[in-house]
Length: 226
Image (cartoon, rainbow, N blue to C red; front, side, top):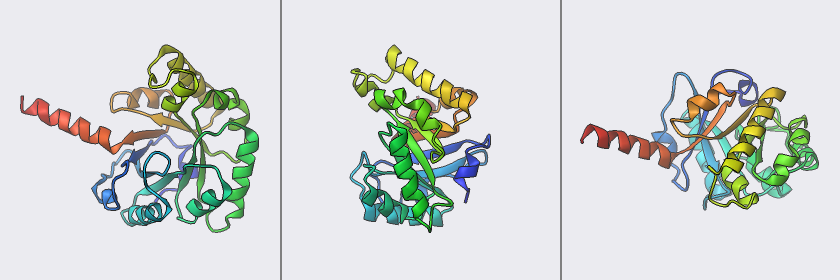
């Protein structure tokens, strides 16, 4: 198992695989890579997975030697503490938009005596407000890494469903460039084709869904059988 907080400063990428609403056994199907750390990204924001199932998935992933990240659906203190109780490697908090919010969350991490020394706080920037507050967020000592969310950012910009819109791409580029210049570890959703480009640009956390991996595999299989 990695210490994700230290690993963010290394050159080896972290591949975070989101299984969507898949069940507990999904960790058994995830591969290990020699040149990347593999993490199970348990998504409690965009799926029906709740705290009980998330805790079971985290235990199963750890037993397989995988790192565990949970994305919570809220920054409410009660929810944050319950997710920290799962003994995860990192907690992704969506819609982070100010240093005040980061400070309050950091205090929750620090006061959670059993996990604060090893659980990373990943702030997700995915709104116009979060982009505007980027400097204060990345300067906050509680934040270990940033996850850029192009899909929700596009909606916040009035361009819902258009993460490839030039204005959205420009905003993502600005966020990524400033994070790299500051030395803040960051990541974002990628495809097998875009991951290499983002690695060259300094990204270390690569977020991909299990559905993407399956689609890529099926696509390769179809090419073989054409």
